[in-house]
Image 1 (cartoon, rainbow, N blue to C red):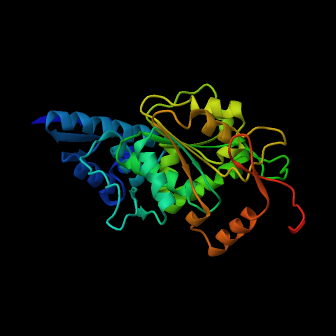
Image 2 (cartoon, rainbow, N blue to C red):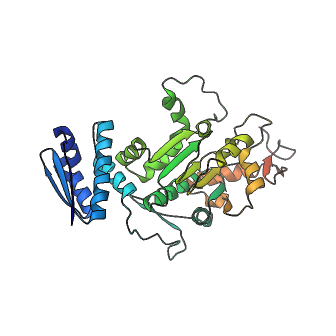
Image 3 (cartoon, helix red, strand yellow):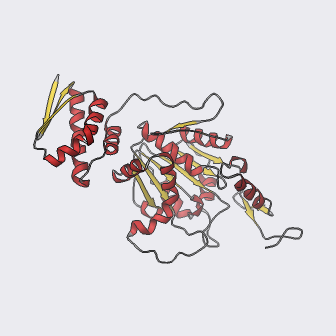
Length: 337
């Protein structure tokens, strides 16, 4: 039986470490299976040597979090325990008996609703790089974020990096007030919405403050190497070829990349080639790379969304040089604009 004591803890810090009605202390004690005694300015731990050593590391991280934020919530403690304390969590099965793929996140379980969604989930689990192309409403972003949270929860990765190009959809917003975070927030909002659909507000806030989840515009990726991360690039159709190359080469050891996009909604300047289309053509057949194509029948938003997509799909089309359908001007016999 080993023992360790942390001393010199100030009163306010001790109150934060213990938590409201000792909630943080109970989370810490129950997760590690240690005997914990808090008296005055000291906290004593006793138990097996390796567990005591782990407990000291967790407590030191708890103190660091409190000193930087001047508060320590139960969500902060859960995240620290999740990062530092491995468990014997059983991986989620590939599919449920009815054939729907299941994703188990920290809070809720999700099930795919279409074959295309199931193909996407299975591709993310089996490959290091997945390029998913499909119309609006097929759940591309939502499923990618859900799978990322499952991998984080099962400790396959240590953090999530959510990326989006700062490209306006056909209209100029002009100057945006505020600091850099306020300026890029409108572009990253869809990713934040997906997170909040699966986690409560306090969990999202804790993940962001502890840098377990990072959201950044594509331009901030240059020069970085991202290890042990699940990296999602949303709206990949709005990247240029050099931008896509730059982004894909950020992958470090133990990392996974998922790129989602709708190649019928490209907002790049006229004449600029789409980086997502180019990536499919260049690297789609490499090992550990998968290309998943969602169809209109995979749309799971409001039923009218599928009808809208179908209406646009009936417009005259031709095949471009990369093998993608490309819209052309209306011809005789078709409604004009």
